Length: 184
Image (cartoon, rainbow, N blue to C red; front, side, top):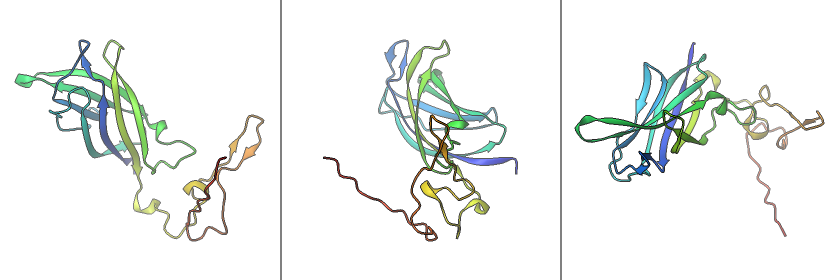
């Protein structure tokens, strides 16, 4: 297996501009893994500089890919498309040690124009989809949903291991325990 599946929901963008003026309509976003593997949202013709797409895409993500690109463009009249800004999303932002990669990650990135100037923000929801052989059916989960082989301890500033989360019982039923904390 030389790739996995990345689920990306393009939620919205904020404060999009062309030549320091707010765009008026027809913004769309393209999620690009490589030159042959990409998907685009529909054009938002109603919300101008603050488009909302809320569109979900599943893309093949080869293991050697270190980041994906998000490009926002504005479709003007007569099929002329103008770039608004782009951002690179590191795969390491999804594959973090403290949260499993198959959890939803709500992320926002600063868009940049070709000259490096800031130009808006893109809001995404990303996760890696698990293959059926990766699902934890019948296997106990440790704190925060990690399986025991993935349950890592963190080290504090003194180099001592600190357990994250609290294991309750044998945890064989995958039950989450919430304890309300009152502040005075």
